[in-house]
Image (cartoon, rainbow, N blue to C red; front, side, top):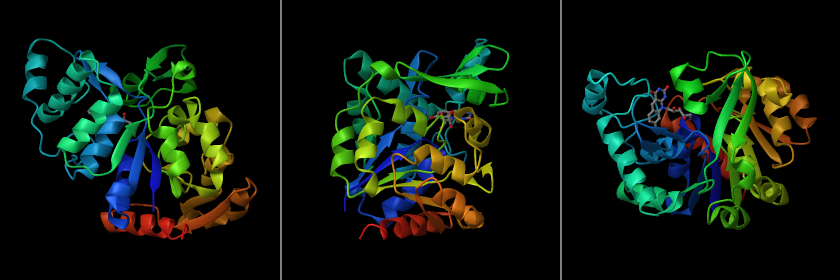
Length: 308
Ligand code: FO1
């Protein structure tokens, strides 16, 4: 069974680790968000692609990003030189960004580089960036400033009130090679439990991706990242109202109504059944709070069983 997944960062990666257990890894294609890519200390960082890669390789750190047990000698030395080191890059992680930046300068595409890194870390699933072009998530604050994604998310701890989000460069971007084919060729497409505004939003903003999903929506299932009106991690609950929906699983269902037919919400939210049905989607209530890998693989297996 061929499976394609749309993924943001840590929430998606936890689910994908379970999916890798429930299915054959070589049958999995992951389309990753690159809207939160950034240039830090002159290096190209692709946080969501790396989070997924390191997690599937079994190497991710406790925080859900970076390598486990990494050291910070380079950052510590930069701090001695007076450099602001708010974005925590471990030494081994820096090697990834160094080689990515070198390979980009040598003319390789982000797809090729992502594939090389995954292969080196022995990840069998195919990880594709949503696009090889530059698409950057920008957030407008209530005070009128426009923030780069990592500035808003990490440096300022997503504390500011946001009035709008845009994806710079999206209109002129194209899906990376293999993205559309993987959607058309999949038996099952899973929208991971990632932030619909800033993780899945940039992927859907790449021309051709949303329209292709709409075309094949009978085989698309989305998983709610909102449980009991709260995002398990990050600012999804604060950002959903920007798209005109409530911060509930039914609000997320409304955003995905054109691109899927099945909608997985947490069993704690089963009182939202009617509201989800009102969006036209069929709700399925499962345990989605992935406290450990077994919950993630059970969730993945339950979802795959919907596509016999
Ligand atoms: N998230 C943080 O909250 N603080 C950090 O210092 C940080 C560093 C970091 C380094 C490499 C990387 O790949 C990810 C990193 N993240 C960090 C996570 C990242 O900013 C976000 O979780 C994603 O961009 C949103 O999915």
